[in-house]
Image (cartoon, rainbow, N blue to C red; front, side, top):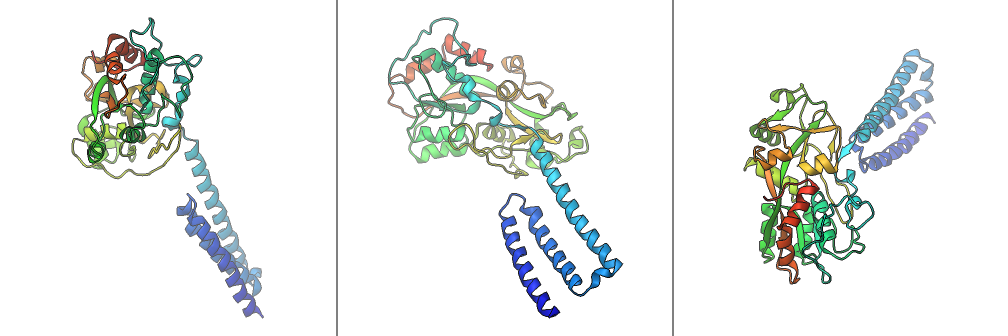
Length: 381
């Protein structure tokens, strides 16, 4: 009977363990629980078999059981505690910005308001605007100055923000008339060419591309060569660039995003390493994919555009670092001493809207450039 009981026990617990392992493999914690569940299942089977044969009276067996189950419980506590710690770390991403605060014509909007009547107005057939998250405050203010006063929903209307890659796809499909973003990537330019879409890129302002680290990271500056070494995987420890003896966590953004395109420009043809981890998040309407969110770990380095990281996110746990000894201040962008400055553009794709050219002329005019400046970016002149 004991043998029959052992066989039944092995079959039942083995099946339960198999099902639990399959379920664990489908979770985000599969790396821990897939080996953990079979180990616990095997341990339980052994403990119960020893009990069937009356071996629990042996002190060695009791000690083995106590140690085994104690280690199992401790492993779960330590693992889940560490995961809770990681989740508690603040994330610096587009989710930290409430774009509804910059919507045109809403009460107490953060969008810049002209101090005088606009010299250009559009009353009907309004151009459809979309663009990068970081530039929404700029083109929202443009719309506030030029468009008639009414409600402009953030997710569905004439003035929306779908983030760079999705806004660009909408432009190519003819769903919007103008997008505001950094220069498209080589892949995005080829996409337009394949679809037979002719793009017009009109510069409307300038901005610094910045790298940021945790406030407690002792590294204050890097050279462009060091940045290239970090993002190619050649430099892997902060001590190699004057920091602590910690592995560098160099996070990236999705292909097609404005900041990832800017990083490729900084790399100047040097291949990027594979990012160490990936996350996909959905936020702020549409499908927004953001890979590898920047967590405030002391060994992390991330990148963005100055106004977004410094003003829109305004997170006190990260600091922008100097590149070639120069900090990315607005003054250093204007005097061109900061080495990584990009233009951002209003991009059109052959829209038939009759107001496009006049609108772009106004954006480049004194009033439009005043809005660029007051929003926190650097005007063309």
